Length: 384
Image (cartoon, rainbow, N blue to C red; front, side, top):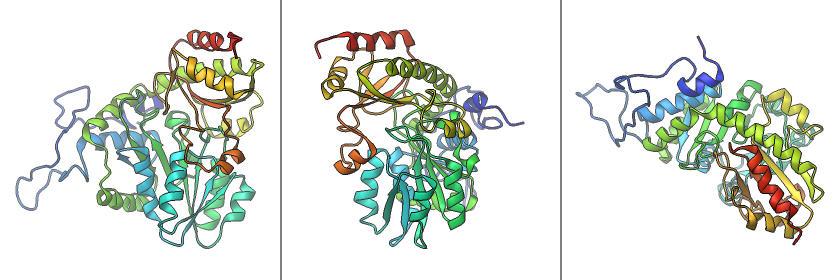
């Protein structure tokens, strides 16, 4: 029997491994670097924690179950996961990528991947523009959906169709919605990326990254890279993410409920010129979002009418915290142009709409009324 999503967050797809746990409800932390062998030619299945560790393995099984994959690999951060992923490619290869991406991914692509001879071809990832960029050297399509921070929704199925026609991989960063709301593999993705630091861990207290695949062949390639580059998630951090995932469903539901309330309130404010949230009625991309996702998530972006108001909000928040990152139980507000996207070229920022008036909000699980009161206090102050 396969469990439903809320149950999978606690036990995986069909139950947890209870080996050596003595009935412990919380999975044990195997805080060891190496494992002893009884004699030559025998093994417990574990040799060295860079390659495998029971705590990390339990986490990987859980994440694979949530994403409907055959394997998940847990890395020390989201960027270490993407860095390892890029080792699948060779000099002369090119990758089609959405032009609205997390700034750290753009930095990796531009400063490391290009140095290694991999060309990145940016697109708005409409089916026509993405297909027009594909040629015999194209090896993958890389997208986020919704995108960070402009909340553009890209059709996973359309990108999968293009990838299949050209015999290439489709890679989807699913950080913003988490596997609770979206499963890209179900719509044709070959590899799913997560910054596990965010919604999976959920408490802003550890960093992690994941690659998930439904292909045994890709899993084998990634596992070889995984043990070679040595960026595996440590046992204690694996346990922290396992603990966080137990409440993934309830956190995502409450955060989404709050995000919808705030998005509607912001859309009614005269000094807000734009609210980007897939769940709003008439939202661009809303139809695609409903087709491939079970929810709109906890992330939204809005634009104020002046730079002064944007800075006033950042300087004046009290309950909400002005901080980089997202996906925790606390509501965080971020200034993409100087934080997450500070290394993105100015012309690209302008192209995708990231200005000094754009603010990104990661909505937490506080009482929505308290969050609205915070914004009312800031918007009602007539000094700006």
